[in-house]
Image 1: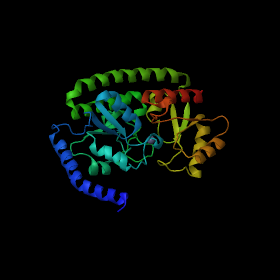
Image 2 (image 1 turned 90 degrees about the vertical axis):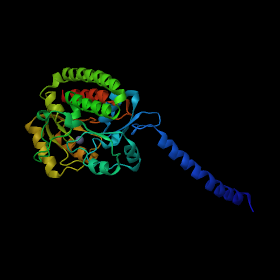
Image 3 (image 1 turned 90 degrees about the horizontal axis):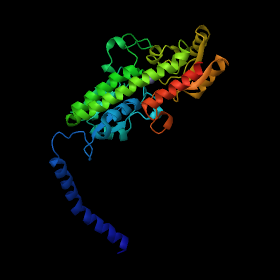
Image 4 (image 1 turned 120 degrees about the vertical axis):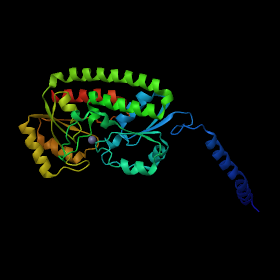
Length: 317
Ligand SMILES: [Zn+2]
């Protein structure tokens, strides 16, 4: 008998004895954990799953060291209108104590996923629903009764989302309520400061018109005195038709459009056509509606807003 075969036999024998012991140990360990620790990781931090990057950032700022945050939609997928969750992200979500989504139709994939895999006691935060109804704007896709979901890009509305997240964390983990309240209050002050800072920077280009990739700036534009006159995409992720491009070119003339704001997910082909047709007077600049933790320029919400406003004020001059 070769050494290798002997080793396999040994392993087989070993496994039959040891494995059940490991399983028993695991079951015992799980059953002796104190009640009420649902949705926490091994170090006792509350597991928080957020749909998009800005909401994940809000959760990190409010939760601080008491939360472990996972973002479902990867940064490259933009605001995730056409996102499909991966098995890896589902694993975290299935253990999360809090799930934070934007709502207003952004995460059409969420309801199905949530009902199947989240814990029965998961605290679900629909952050955009915290924005008062009279501050919501209709969706430009024109479907009656639908509101535009991109509220986080107006810092004064992001404050409502941060408050909703604070309430969700307090509900799931009341023992750290004071910390969540303190962190949220400090962050909201920062957001108010940011709002004023961005307003001052955009003052010089007030009233300027632009075309966006998709209805990203529906709240941002009127809040800061800019005009989003059209969108390249007719539907999320859909390439613009020749007719769509012709309509946009009309708007470029009619509204004296100064810039087209591209986003990472817009196809280079569509952008090429628009750039060529729009003429030399129209600048094309890339903005980011969600940010990316791995890119130092836009690694959190506040940096991303400063970056986008910097790009915009330069392009709209
Ligand atoms: Zn979007």
